[in-house]
Image (tube, rainbow over all chains, first blue to last red):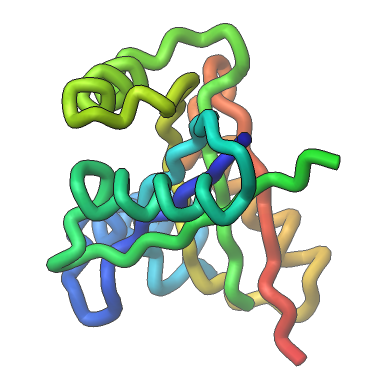
Length: 82
Length: 82
């Protein structure tokens, strides 16, 4: 089952990479961009019988390796396979 | 307008970071994970009058700075503001 995991910094956590990108965009003339935040999007296949099991495994993977839950939030999306 | 940009490696481009994560997941017992690919998710606010203008600006930002279009694809999502 195709799973997409979006990992983003929690609100309030400083994002120096996002800040740098915002400055670079400004220097290129994109002064209409603000609040740039950069996260990760991980896509993977999980071998699971059903969606709830895939969701559960993905959450376990986030908690143990993929996300730093002290400063990051994660969001799991399952692709429909119909 | 809130915009989310998902940047992923094009099909066929090797993803050593994804490969490393897949191996690490396997070592932790998550042998049900496969085809791990890692991309970036950039969220930002764009000061634009309407959705089509925001979409256009976001695409310009991707082409000039955010994505490496030789090896990466980007996808722009506009948040509904209703």
